[in-house]
Length: 282
Image (cartoon, rainbow, N blue to C red; front, top):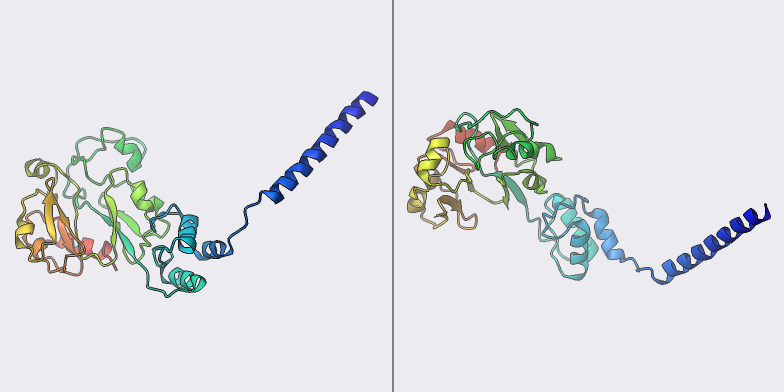
């Protein structure tokens, strides 16, 4: 009995000694808290989405406090966060650098073909593992709604097998970008005036076989643009948001109607007008 008590006593004593050593070590080696960084973290939304260009909210707080990063890069936080962070840092609020998500595909089931029947797990990521999905276009939206499920703000809906983004609800958090296995959703400045709703780099003849609204790289858009804002690269047209004025010439001359100019009534397609109402930068 005495041997058991002795063993228990020794273990208890060792625990006490080691606990004391750890307490002293934690006090000696403690990293002092940066009050400014902590204050910035308190007002940031905590989404850790990386839309600001940093590793997360803590990384952005560190950059603002010690590296001179400008306020207003937090798109999910909006104007309120920009004002609060500017007040903490004692700098002027230069406004929010807003971003919106755009779906670079217009091939809904009404316009796009199907190459096979898919009966697996109803998610885009699962469908993409099965020979790239069931859509005839290997670049097209699969329409199972992984992006809508990932969006915390209810900004995405699926209609006729195609994702649509309501820019009035989009907070620019980039979670939908990460959720799309086809990389069809990209971020663009809030001032963006137009988008090419296609991501296919196939030749025009191949695109026509699988989708009625895909870019065929015909270059008609580049010929009519007076502002040098649209170019064809690797068989796909791309719009430079810094140069685009939203005049609508490219959209009017696109034979497949894959270009949407926000706020501009496309005279050739009711489908373009419908997408304009649900995927339009503020």
